Length: 415
Image (cartoon, rainbow, N blue to C red; front, side, top):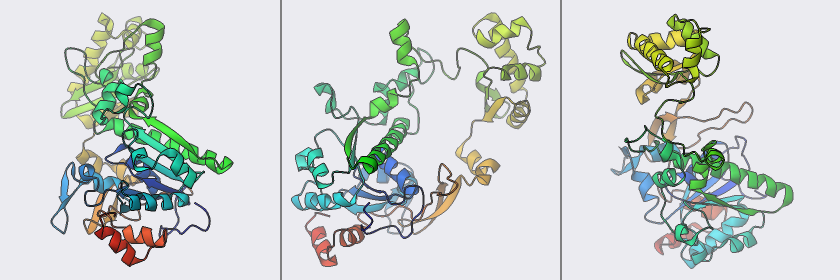
């Protein structure tokens, strides 16, 4: 933001102080990127449709009753903190005008829609960049802004991104079991990470050169980018990687094991295998066990797996975790929400915090700030708010409208 631009936050904090973002997307991927920035001190203005809002994500799962006898989803309470919420119909001429008046005071505009949606409202990239040559525009869509015409208009959600991007083919157990989606909404959260880092990269360039630019982020490509060597293996060897369940496949132990009272993960990559052998009373130098380490499906490998599983089955989770970690072997319980809420390490790191939620009119507790900055830490200064909660603040302070004008725009259905 320019030095003379009015500020919205009650106080500066975090590494992104001085950055203003307009977010006009819905549901998860793009707005979550903006919310992460808001937790690090950016001023984020979230635009929703008047009278409707982000109806899916505001109400989708695990609803909580509000004082006015409506409800709001737990995910909305968790993921819409620190954001200024305005309602604005961008398809109207007045809505478009107000939006373009906000753009010169903005560093980054993020949105998620099918290609061409904003252009139909007269808000194409050229028009927006003309209003602010330094702005970074990040378009988030399922299949991208350009490409094969048969794909660009297709609907996409988390589930679709996981499937088309290649993740689901690798997630789950081998045939005949069906592929399994990663939860919750893993494709959306991965896409959010790509959205935020690329937007900030564009912002850094704009600060150095004075030139903004447009970022085309396809959700399936963000997912595809996390496929490690899957495609190189195909192009080099013709290998179509498949599902292997929880096993690593190339070495062991790296799997889920059942104890007396639940499940644990044991992961030993490289030299920690020797430590597992010692825990089990096996000689790690014995050629039999050396083969078992990397030839998982061999008779030796299957025998080792059976010995380890038998050892785990005779013990409770706490004992397995204590013994393996004492031996410097990676081992953890598979944590539930209850486990995480009561875990001393989560508590010591302040992973879960309380904050005031405006919609609920009370404190709530959930996931805090991640990661931790030593000099410019992020914070939660306000929880989620109702639709259009900040209309008067934004339109009077940033655009100079009078409260009566804001009220008139509401009556006209523009805000």
